[in-house]
Amino acid sequence: MCGIIGYVGKRQALPVLLQGLHAQEYRGYDSAGIATLEEDQIRLIRCQGKIACLEEKINNDMGSSDIGIGHTRWATHGCPSEANSHPHTDCSGDIAVVHNGIIENYLELRQWLMDEGHVFSSQTDTEVLPHLLEHYYRGDMQEAFVKAMSKLRGSYAVVALCRQQPRTLVAARQDNPLVSGIGDGEYFWA
Ligand code: GLU
Image 1: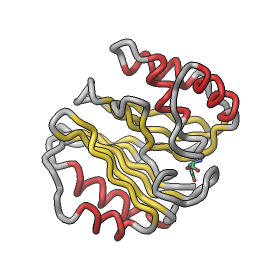
Image 2: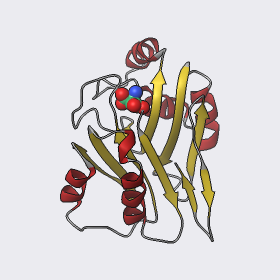
Image 3: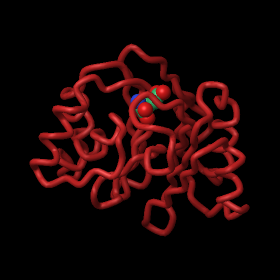
Image 4: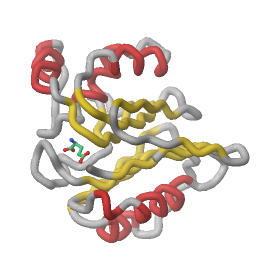
C-alpha cells in the first residue's frame, strides 16, 4: 500500500502535492518523493523516511511549477532507500511515474527492457513503467500509456508525467483505488 497524488492546474503544484501526501502518509511512510516540471526539466526530490524529510530537502524552495506527482511509499519490491523511492524515471529523465500496487510480471518486463538497452537504477517492480513508456513514446503520451498498461499484470494505480507534454498527466488503475478531482481549472489524482 502507498499513497499517490497528481496535480495540474493554476496553483503552485508543490505545496498542493505535499498537502496531498500528508493526507495519505498513513498509507506508507518508509520514503517519499515528488516530481514537478521546472523550466522544462523534471525536478525530482526523493527521500528515505517520512514526508518531513522530503520537506527538509525541499527547504522551502517551492518552485513555480503548476504540474507534478507525489508518492509516499510502503515498499513491496526493493528495500526502503532513496534509489527505490518514487517517482521513478526513464533513461532520459523525461518521464516520471508514481505507482501504488504490484506489477506481477515485472521481472520478465525488466529483462526485456534491459535487453533493449534500458538502464535500471532501482530494485522496484515500478521502474519498468517509465521505461515501458519511454519504449512506446512517439510523441503522444496517451498512446504510449495505453500500450504500456496493456503489458502489465497485477494491481496498480499509476500517474505519469512527461516533460514533452507539460499540461498533461496520465493515469490508470487496475484493482486498486484511484480517484480524480476536478476543480476550477485544476485536476487532481489520488
Ligand atoms: N510496489 C511498489 C514499490 O515497492 C509500490 C509500493 C506500494 O504500493 O506499496 O515501490
